[in-house]
Image (cartoon, helix red, strand yellow):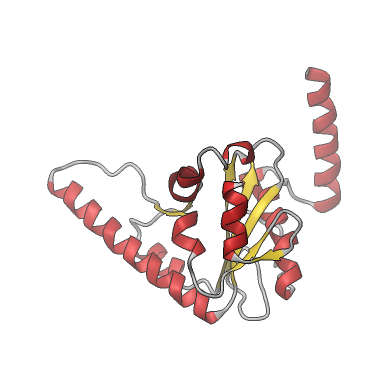
Length: 202
């Protein structure tokens, strides 16, 4: 095991030296896997490789793209289909106690969501909102979540209880029914919603 670790660190050092960033920092390699998929849809590209600053990606419509990823256990999808859609795979926007951050969350012009197999670290599906109809629909979902989160914070403040998690969460079920959503499988092929749901339960 330790020899394998040494070899991995040698490869990592070589990658960092060549590309000038650490792909494991902030799980940035997962974002790169998502970009590889969505770039085949509309030529989305990376503005930079800094995983902790600025917007995540650009496309022909906007320079304010946001990418979120979540790990799943592909082998468990069929067994826990309902949980997979509602609870097991959640994507988060944090710092929602900050009003400025709430506004910034609504300013993104495109959203990409990647579901990553926890065992192989490969893409299972990507969900992409890259047009005005889809983005506006998702913004309304965000606003509803933010309003509920504000109410939750106020109620806890009233009873002098601390809010430990400052994030709003979105399940696959929250996203999958958005109009004009683009769904891609592990090979970057575009599939429709029914095909996606059939694969989830197969």
